[in-house]
Amino acid sequence: MATTSSSSSKRKRQQRQAGIRILLLCAIIVCVNLLASQLHYGFDLTEEKRFTLSPSTKNLLRKMDEVAVVDVYLKGELPSGFQRLAASTRERLQYFKEIAGKKVMFRFIDPFEGKTEEQKGPIFQALAKKGINGTNLQVQDENGYSEKIIFPCALVQYKGKEFPVNLLENEHQGMSPIEVLNYSESLLEYKFANAINYLSQPDQPHVGYIMGNNENLGAHTRDMLNTLRMLYHLDTLDLGGSLEILGPGLGLYETIIINNPKTPFLDKDKFKIDQFIMRGGHVIWLVDGLAASMDSMSRETQSFLTQEQPLNLEDMLFTYGVRVNANLVEDMDCNPIPVVVGMVADQPQTELRSWFYFPVLIPTINHPIVHNLDPVMTTFASSMDTIANPEIKKTVLLASSKYSRVAPHPVRVSLSMMHYKPDNRMFNKPYQPVAVLLEGKFKSVFNNRLEPEFIKVLKDSLKMPFRASCDTSTSMIVISDGDMFENDYSEREGTMEMGYWRFTRNRFSNKTFMLNCMEYLTDKSGLLESRSKDVKLRLLDNGRVKTEKTMWQWINIGVPSGLILVFASVFLFFRKRRYEKKL
Image (cartoon, rainbow, N blue to C red):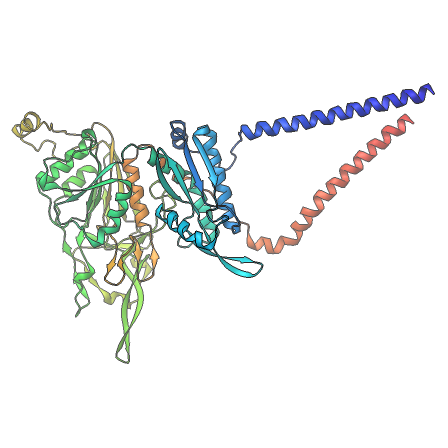
């Protein structure tokens, strides 16, 4: 009887201890989850560091002095691709919140949730005014296919201002939808950080568009100028009507754009540009090596001869570290143009054929300006040479393809060449530079060329002391195609987007390239580097998937089941031996 009572009390004690262990385990799990919800830390073991914010982004977030609210319009029933984009967006914003704390708040919104069809119209228009544009998709449901408008966008609100962020990139040439989605995810950090940085600036950088040498200003520059006005204070600046270009040290222009001049620069105007650079100013040069235009094509001969382009800038660019050559780049990787190939019933028959003088440049280097950039189209571009100067760093941003060559001046440009099949062996001058970034402390082209009396007048009377070199490092970008940032225009279609090729309806990245150049030259935050982050898409080998499908199915099903059986057998074996000894 005593043995039975002792056994019963022992069993109750064991049950009580087991209950306490279960309660402690539950308490530990709850505490761990509460801590995990407040504290996030992990080790980024990915090769491309996809889960790690760049140092420039972290520095920006730590300096935030107000709360930024991000409204993401990806919520509700979405296709799988957009669900993945929404999850990636939430993940990036959570990383932002971990660095900035309560200075970053975000929420996901379905703008049409609970709204009638009559209410959706005004909502759509209100969002469009803020730069939030919808995308019409066909979604499969139980009744077949139906149309659904979704908004792959976000709106960042900071310091009383708003900035729209497009989360989904446009379809890139040669990219599948899943690759476009992956590319869009890789840019999320840059886009949100850039939006916060833009809104945090008390005043946007000033940009001067130089006039006075027959630069284009009209229908063909409308898209470029309108785009720049959205992000910068843009002014046109006539060199002949000013004593100097007020640069960064004088509180005005950060960057000037010299876009496709056609008449020679006077020495006094060159002096103004030179001293602007010596004071730390930045320049984007778009200059042609030769005068060449399809408008010069003779109707009778279907050809024309190139003309010299005397701009009187050769000594300046040479001193700064680059030379634009008097030639034309011919490239097998190029845009097509329509040509007449025959007549049918007195009607000309046209066909699109490659026009070697319109190279399509594919970026190949890992630089923030051109990383992950789609091809950029050019028209009658010239090659460039970089000059040996250890004080100046030269980076070739854009170059021709492997199958290219140069035609020296004078060049007879004729449509008849498109009637013959090109020989790859003749295109034997690969990778001709077309866009070059120069960085460093430049020396003045007027050094040792000015009279002492003139230098004295500059200093004493005009209060503009001559600078023989830069005190600090600055930068400039030289592009040997004056038309790269211009848009097409027609009476029927009006102003077209920069980089749009109407004959094939392809969109090239000329606009993105321009904006990246401007941001690199004007923005000192370094956020453009986060654009270089590459999120690799690791796809399965379709061939192996087909041949090894059954094997891996059996492995995935059989191995876990086998391990469970092995552990169960071992557990039963030792349990049996344990209780056998007691008996």
